[in-house]
Image (cartoon, rainbow, N blue to C red; front, side, top):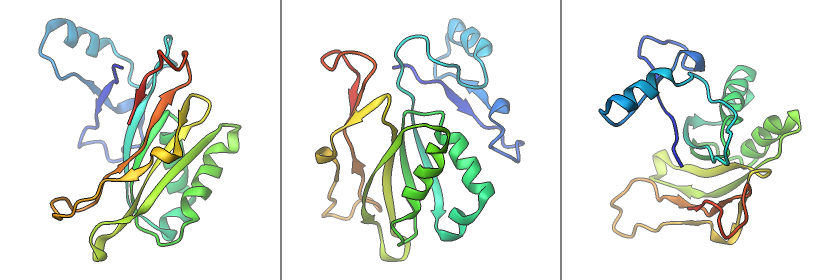
Length: 178
């Protein structure tokens, strides 16, 4: 699964201007540079079965941010570009923020759902981690959702793990990941 990687220039004050993102490559080959230079700045509809995966730190997503129509619109526009999104930074103790966000995504007859983990992290900076996924393109097994325990307290936030499989091909050939 080849995912395009984009660089958001520091000079770009509004990072939501997706068309101004710069595609980048991790290789130094001339072919990769030519492909990157010719790559579109916004994702195209996939021609072959493709799974678009992202991670998004909502940075202290709480009631105040959730009530902002502008913030909500930016988040929804970004999330709709992906099939599976790992979400971090949900700091609200209210459990209804994510369902409300999913309802907003699905207003245009889309079919996104979510998996949510328990609060994790230090008491003064605890957060909830989640996955948002497109149910028309991805299936999951809710019994495979778990938090990796860190008894040695080596990492600040215990990772959330989920299981996902593409619906675009037969299950035995489908891209399956966690």
